[in-house]
Image (cartoon, rainbow, N blue to C red; front, side, top):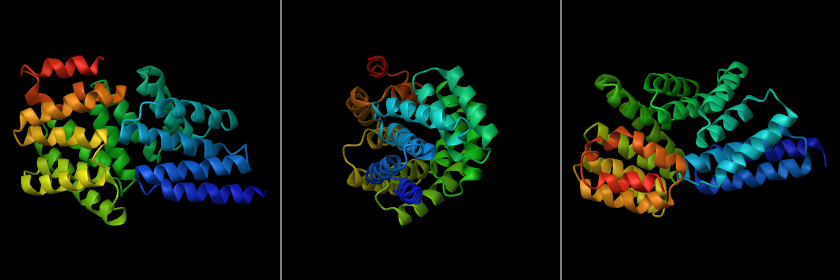
Length: 289
Protein backbone atom coordinates (compact mmCIF):
# COMPACT_ATOMS: atom_id res chain seq x y z
CA UNK A 1 0.00 0.00 0.00
CA UNK A 2 1.11 3.55 -0.62
CA UNK A 3 2.05 5.63 2.42
CA UNK A 4 -0.47 8.25 1.23
CA UNK A 5 -3.27 5.79 2.01
CA UNK A 6 -2.04 5.60 5.60
CA UNK A 7 -2.08 9.40 5.75
CA UNK A 8 -5.65 9.44 4.46
CA UNK A 9 -6.67 7.09 7.27
CA UNK A 10 -4.82 9.26 9.77
CA UNK A 11 -6.63 12.40 8.59
CA UNK A 12 -9.97 10.59 8.84
CA UNK A 13 -9.07 9.60 12.38
CA UNK A 14 -8.23 13.19 13.26
CA UNK A 15 -11.54 14.42 11.87
CA UNK A 16 -13.47 11.85 13.93
CA UNK A 17 -11.37 12.55 17.03
CA UNK A 18 -12.33 16.23 16.96
CA UNK A 19 -16.06 15.36 16.98
CA UNK A 20 -15.63 14.71 20.71
CA UNK A 21 -17.93 11.82 21.60
CA UNK A 22 -17.37 8.26 22.82
CA UNK A 23 -18.61 6.76 19.54
CA UNK A 24 -16.40 9.00 17.44
CA UNK A 25 -13.36 8.39 19.66
CA UNK A 26 -13.76 4.65 19.02
CA UNK A 27 -14.14 5.25 15.27
CA UNK A 28 -11.08 7.51 15.29
CA UNK A 29 -9.06 4.80 17.03
CA UNK A 30 -10.04 2.36 14.28
CA UNK A 31 -8.80 4.77 11.60
CA UNK A 32 -5.48 5.34 13.38
CA UNK A 33 -5.07 1.56 13.68
CA UNK A 34 -5.67 1.20 9.93
CA UNK A 35 -3.04 3.86 9.28
CA UNK A 36 -0.53 1.85 11.35
CA UNK A 37 -1.44 -1.36 9.53
CA UNK A 38 -0.63 0.42 6.26
CA UNK A 39 2.50 2.11 7.59
CA UNK A 40 3.90 0.57 10.82
CA UNK A 41 6.38 3.44 11.16
CA UNK A 42 3.70 6.13 11.37
CA UNK A 43 4.52 7.81 14.69
CA UNK A 44 1.64 10.29 14.55
CA UNK A 45 -0.89 7.47 14.19
CA UNK A 46 0.39 5.87 17.42
CA UNK A 47 0.12 9.30 19.04
CA UNK A 48 -3.45 9.53 17.69
CA UNK A 49 -4.41 6.30 19.45
CA UNK A 50 -2.80 7.62 22.64
CA UNK A 51 -4.84 10.84 22.31
CA UNK A 52 -8.07 8.84 21.94
CA UNK A 53 -7.30 6.74 25.00
CA UNK A 54 -6.39 9.90 26.92
CA UNK A 55 -9.81 11.45 26.33
CA UNK A 56 -11.62 8.17 26.98
CA UNK A 57 -9.82 8.17 30.33
CA UNK A 58 -10.60 11.83 31.11
CA UNK A 59 -14.09 12.20 29.64
CA UNK A 60 -15.47 8.72 30.33
CA UNK A 61 -13.45 7.61 33.38
CA UNK A 62 -12.13 4.52 31.56
CA UNK A 63 -9.34 3.34 33.85
CA UNK A 64 -8.06 0.72 31.40
CA UNK A 65 -7.48 3.36 28.73
CA UNK A 66 -4.59 4.80 30.75
CA UNK A 67 -2.30 1.86 30.00
CA UNK A 68 -3.05 2.28 26.31
CA UNK A 69 -2.00 5.92 26.52
CA UNK A 70 1.40 4.98 27.90
CA UNK A 71 1.98 2.07 25.50
CA UNK A 72 1.10 4.00 22.36
CA UNK A 73 2.81 7.25 23.33
CA UNK A 74 5.97 5.22 23.98
CA UNK A 75 5.67 3.59 20.55
CA UNK A 76 5.25 7.00 18.94
CA UNK A 77 8.28 8.40 20.78
CA UNK A 78 10.41 5.40 19.83
CA UNK A 79 9.77 6.42 16.21
CA UNK A 80 9.96 10.18 16.77
CA UNK A 81 11.35 11.42 20.12
CA UNK A 82 10.41 14.99 19.26
CA UNK A 83 6.70 14.39 18.70
CA UNK A 84 5.05 16.89 21.03
CA UNK A 85 1.64 15.18 20.95
CA UNK A 86 3.14 11.94 22.26
CA UNK A 87 5.06 13.80 24.98
CA UNK A 88 1.82 15.41 26.17
CA UNK A 89 -0.18 12.18 26.26
CA UNK A 90 2.67 10.37 27.98
CA UNK A 91 2.58 13.11 30.60
CA UNK A 92 -1.13 12.49 31.14
CA UNK A 93 -0.55 8.77 31.63
CA UNK A 94 2.20 9.43 34.17
CA UNK A 95 0.00 11.94 35.97
CA UNK A 96 -2.83 9.39 36.11
CA UNK A 97 -0.38 7.01 37.78
CA UNK A 98 0.55 9.80 40.26
CA UNK A 99 4.09 10.07 38.90
CA UNK A 100 3.71 13.83 38.92
CA UNK A 101 7.35 14.95 38.61
CA UNK A 102 7.86 12.74 35.55
CA UNK A 103 4.57 13.94 34.10
CA UNK A 104 5.51 17.59 34.48
CA UNK A 105 8.84 16.96 32.77
CA UNK A 106 6.98 15.48 29.78
CA UNK A 107 4.58 18.44 29.63
CA UNK A 108 7.48 20.87 29.69
CA UNK A 109 9.13 19.00 26.81
CA UNK A 110 5.88 18.97 24.85
CA UNK A 111 5.42 22.73 25.29
CA UNK A 112 9.06 23.37 24.35
CA UNK A 113 8.46 21.41 21.14
CA UNK A 114 5.09 23.04 20.39
CA UNK A 115 3.88 25.89 22.60
CA UNK A 116 0.58 25.95 20.68
CA UNK A 117 -0.38 22.36 21.51
CA UNK A 118 -3.75 22.38 23.28
CA UNK A 119 -3.39 18.95 24.86
CA UNK A 120 -0.05 19.86 26.47
CA UNK A 121 -1.60 22.78 28.36
CA UNK A 122 -4.91 21.06 29.10
CA UNK A 123 -3.29 17.89 30.46
CA UNK A 124 -0.68 19.91 32.37
CA UNK A 125 -3.48 21.88 34.01
CA UNK A 126 -5.18 18.67 35.13
CA UNK A 127 -1.90 17.43 36.60
CA UNK A 128 -1.49 20.68 38.54
CA UNK A 129 -5.11 20.66 39.74
CA UNK A 130 -5.00 17.24 41.37
CA UNK A 131 -1.87 18.39 43.21
CA UNK A 132 -3.62 21.54 44.45
CA UNK A 133 -1.43 23.89 42.39
CA UNK A 134 -4.26 26.25 41.55
CA UNK A 135 -2.34 29.24 40.16
CA UNK A 136 -0.46 26.96 37.77
CA UNK A 137 -3.69 25.21 36.84
CA UNK A 138 -5.28 28.54 35.91
CA UNK A 139 -2.27 29.50 33.80
CA UNK A 140 -2.29 26.28 31.78
CA UNK A 141 -6.05 26.10 31.28
CA UNK A 142 -6.15 29.73 30.23
CA UNK A 143 -3.45 29.01 27.68
CA UNK A 144 -5.31 25.90 26.49
CA UNK A 145 -8.39 28.03 25.81
CA UNK A 146 -6.30 30.57 23.92
CA UNK A 147 -4.71 28.05 21.55
CA UNK A 148 -8.05 26.29 20.92
CA UNK A 149 -10.86 28.85 20.61
CA UNK A 150 -13.43 26.04 20.27
CA UNK A 151 -12.52 24.52 23.63
CA UNK A 152 -15.24 24.64 26.27
CA UNK A 153 -13.69 22.20 28.75
CA UNK A 154 -10.84 24.28 30.15
CA UNK A 155 -13.06 27.36 30.34
CA UNK A 156 -15.73 25.64 32.44
CA UNK A 157 -13.17 23.86 34.63
CA UNK A 158 -11.54 27.22 35.31
CA UNK A 159 -14.65 28.21 37.26
CA UNK A 160 -13.67 25.72 39.98
CA UNK A 161 -10.15 27.12 40.15
CA UNK A 162 -11.30 30.74 40.37
CA UNK A 163 -13.86 29.81 43.02
CA UNK A 164 -11.11 28.28 45.15
CA UNK A 165 -8.91 31.33 44.55
CA UNK A 166 -11.80 33.61 45.57
CA UNK A 167 -11.75 35.37 42.18
CA UNK A 168 -15.48 35.80 41.56
CA UNK A 169 -15.24 38.03 38.49
CA UNK A 170 -12.91 35.60 36.76
CA UNK A 171 -15.18 32.72 37.77
CA UNK A 172 -18.22 34.35 36.15
CA UNK A 173 -16.32 35.33 33.02
CA UNK A 174 -15.02 31.78 32.61
CA UNK A 175 -18.57 30.43 33.04
CA UNK A 176 -19.93 32.77 30.35
CA UNK A 177 -17.18 31.89 27.87
CA UNK A 178 -17.47 28.19 28.65
CA UNK A 179 -21.24 28.24 28.18
CA UNK A 180 -20.96 30.01 24.84
CA UNK A 181 -18.42 27.48 23.61
CA UNK A 182 -20.46 24.52 24.94
CA UNK A 183 -23.49 25.81 23.02
CA UNK A 184 -21.40 26.01 19.85
CA UNK A 185 -20.02 22.52 20.41
CA UNK A 186 -23.50 21.02 20.86
CA UNK A 187 -24.64 22.74 17.66
CA UNK A 188 -21.75 21.00 15.86
CA UNK A 189 -21.90 17.68 17.74
CA UNK A 190 -25.28 17.09 19.46
CA UNK A 191 -24.08 13.75 20.93
CA UNK A 192 -21.25 15.32 22.94
CA UNK A 193 -22.39 14.57 26.47
CA UNK A 194 -19.44 16.43 28.01
CA UNK A 195 -20.52 19.70 26.38
CA UNK A 196 -24.01 19.16 27.82
CA UNK A 197 -23.01 18.52 31.42
CA UNK A 198 -20.21 21.09 31.52
CA UNK A 199 -22.60 23.61 30.00
CA UNK A 200 -24.97 22.78 32.84
CA UNK A 201 -22.13 23.43 35.29
CA UNK A 202 -21.53 26.84 33.74
CA UNK A 203 -25.22 27.68 33.99
CA UNK A 204 -25.28 26.74 37.67
CA UNK A 205 -22.30 29.03 38.32
CA UNK A 206 -24.24 31.81 36.60
CA UNK A 207 -27.27 31.13 38.83
CA UNK A 208 -29.48 29.95 35.97
CA UNK A 209 -30.88 26.97 37.86
CA UNK A 210 -33.77 25.91 35.63
CA UNK A 211 -31.65 26.06 32.47
CA UNK A 212 -28.89 24.13 34.24
CA UNK A 213 -31.39 21.39 35.11
CA UNK A 214 -32.57 21.28 31.47
CA UNK A 215 -28.99 20.82 30.29
CA UNK A 216 -28.45 18.09 32.90
CA UNK A 217 -31.53 16.28 31.64
CA UNK A 218 -30.17 16.56 28.12
CA UNK A 219 -26.83 15.08 29.24
CA UNK A 220 -28.57 12.11 30.86
CA UNK A 221 -30.61 11.55 27.71
CA UNK A 222 -27.41 11.42 25.64
CA UNK A 223 -25.60 8.93 27.91
CA UNK A 224 -27.54 7.83 31.03
CA UNK A 225 -24.87 5.39 32.28
CA UNK A 226 -21.83 7.64 31.94
CA UNK A 227 -19.80 8.07 35.15
CA UNK A 228 -18.73 11.63 34.42
CA UNK A 229 -22.27 12.73 33.60
CA UNK A 230 -23.38 11.54 37.05
CA UNK A 231 -20.33 13.16 38.62
CA UNK A 232 -21.08 16.57 37.14
CA UNK A 233 -24.77 16.35 38.03
CA UNK A 234 -23.60 15.68 41.59
CA UNK A 235 -21.64 18.94 41.39
CA UNK A 236 -24.75 20.78 40.22
CA UNK A 237 -26.86 19.16 42.95
CA UNK A 238 -24.61 20.76 45.55
CA UNK A 239 -25.06 24.15 43.89
CA UNK A 240 -28.85 23.64 44.04
CA UNK A 241 -28.72 22.68 47.73
CA UNK A 242 -29.69 19.06 46.96
CA UNK A 243 -27.01 17.51 49.16
CA UNK A 244 -28.57 14.06 49.58
CA UNK A 245 -28.89 13.68 45.83
CA UNK A 246 -25.25 14.66 45.43
CA UNK A 247 -24.19 12.04 47.99
CA UNK A 248 -26.40 9.39 46.33
CA UNK A 249 -24.78 10.08 42.95
CA UNK A 250 -21.24 10.03 44.36
CA UNK A 251 -21.79 6.81 46.27
CA UNK A 252 -23.17 5.20 43.12
CA UNK A 253 -20.50 6.37 40.66
CA UNK A 254 -17.27 6.22 42.68
CA UNK A 255 -17.03 2.39 42.71
CA UNK A 256 -17.02 2.58 38.88
CA UNK A 257 -14.78 5.65 38.60
CA UNK A 258 -11.14 5.84 37.56
CA UNK A 259 -8.39 6.58 40.05
CA UNK A 260 -8.04 10.04 38.50
CA UNK A 261 -11.72 10.81 39.10
CA UNK A 262 -11.40 9.69 42.72
CA UNK A 263 -8.45 12.01 43.29
CA UNK A 264 -10.34 14.80 41.54
CA UNK A 265 -13.33 14.30 43.85
CA UNK A 266 -11.24 15.05 46.92
CA UNK A 267 -9.86 18.23 45.33
CA UNK A 268 -13.08 19.49 43.70
CA UNK A 269 -14.25 22.81 45.17
CA UNK A 270 -17.81 22.02 44.04
CA UNK A 271 -18.06 19.63 46.99
CA UNK A 272 -16.85 22.06 49.66
CA UNK A 273 -20.29 22.27 51.25
CA UNK A 274 -20.38 18.49 51.68
CA UNK A 275 -17.06 18.05 53.45
CA UNK A 276 -18.30 18.71 57.01
CA UNK A 277 -21.40 16.51 56.65
CA UNK A 278 -21.49 12.95 58.06
CA UNK A 279 -21.91 11.26 54.66
CA UNK A 280 -18.65 12.76 53.34
CA UNK A 281 -16.64 10.12 55.23
CA UNK A 282 -18.23 7.45 53.01
CA UNK A 283 -17.14 9.41 49.93
CA UNK A 284 -13.57 9.53 51.25
CA UNK A 285 -13.64 5.78 51.84
CA UNK A 286 -14.85 5.14 48.30
CA UNK A 287 -12.07 7.28 46.81
CA UNK A 288 -9.46 5.13 48.52
CA UNK A 289 -11.02 1.82 47.51
